[in-house]
Length: 65
Figure 1 (cartoon, rainbow, N blue to C red):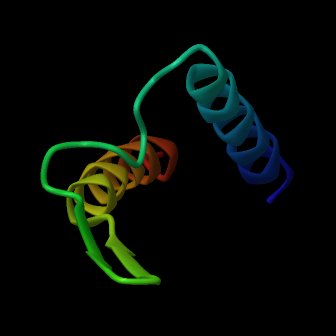
Figure 2: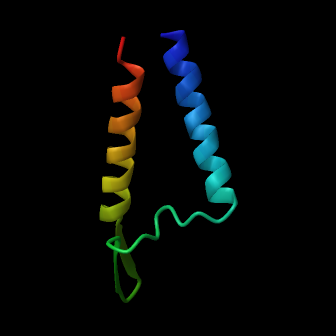
């Protein structure tokens, strides 16, 4: 459990560094934004798919024995 928490923390920190350096997470093609008057709805479909694939690969490699 400790190893998992350390790796999870490092992954979150790495993502934070990449966002700081200008990686457009959350602004990928396929993310939908609807603006109507004073209402804005944002749905990050492409970002969700990319994050899901990356987490699946990460957990697959971490859980192998």
